Image (cartoon, rainbow over all chains, first blue to last red; front, side, top):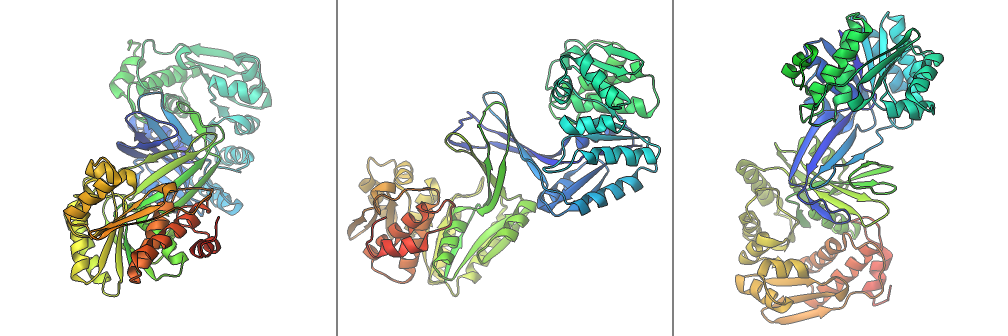
Length: 295
Length: 295
């Protein structure tokens, strides 16, 4: 089983408007609400490829209650007093506009309860995936705690985070999976290789860098592997990174060679691009891509 | 007591961003959530001036639960299966951008339960105020039903609505309070006097037209009264219309002469402009304005 951890889940709301008119009143024609957060999306992809999965997340307030009720993957919620956040995406006649709430403040006592639930939930786990931002005011050291808790349970951790949380994960010895922009921003390195080397020096066990249309690369102390992206895949790139994380996680949990893990990540990421909604994948395309067939 | 009816309540969410960048991701710096809907705002103003009030509203889903928990005026909620809507206002470096959800679909059975609660809730009422939009798909005839139910209970109705709901209210013999733009849009009249005359011909008992900075006018079969706005009032006009409705309602419920009702509406509307939040009024300024003092 894979456990995903979603530190800052969200209700992802999408508003469809006709003509988007900033500075004025926009009548919303259609509203969609779904549970979101990167760890939730990773769990959804894992469930779609029949991997036993459970996501652990803090939930609070009526928004948290709604999210728990609508979540379509197995989960364990740790109750918090703050209100679970919402993100709003406005789609209309131009590029989508996104508003991201910072998320609730989670108390030290609530994080302690969270850690304790994580610890007991890892007994049957093959891998822990920590994915997405931390709520407002949360210390990046939390990520290091989660990596340590997993290690004590004999479980490896894969972290998809950015900024100080990414650095904390590397220092704690996790496998990390930033995208190229996150890698460069967190390390202030001049290029990808230098950034990956910096994270390895901090202690990261493995640094996997997603390059969008340019594929995916893995850096270890032993060298670098890279695979190209599946060519000519057209669609919605939202959620492709989470699907790639899921593909990587499946292979790492199964003990596959790294090059196979990268191929799996690229195939699952491309299969997500073919579906309009984050967390969904085109399973038939995934199998074709794994067998080397083109889009 | 005054009963206000809020057919389509909302959670009013305000996002403060730094620079508002449509077509991109906007990090929300501050989130405010409060119960909204015009009938709720009218009730809040009435409570602020110590008038016994209760608002009747349909509430559904976790959003409805949140709204009920946060509502700071006496209310009676009729449960519905749909989810109570949200409005989002984005404030930043330019004009505010507003997104209004259409609201839940309310079934015929739910409206029947609503009517029955309205009927039993009017026994101690001096006036019914129907204020704001109808939820998606709701028939304007509902407004006529509410006016009739109130009449059967011996209670007058004041309706602040637009479009077909405004016409239905006039036909049902209510007192109506559109703003000038709503009046012209609903009646397709060339000017205010012609629009008001059209509503009176349909059957409206009284037509009060708010003119923003140009004051407020009342049309009856006997003639027209008008009072100017309180001059030089600077602030936030959001909610001023609801405060003016509240001021009108207080005077109508007390049986005051119409000219006094208009003065009260103008004073309370201006006192709302001085407060940043819809539903709040500057009570000291209200008393000054009633006594003829300037802003």
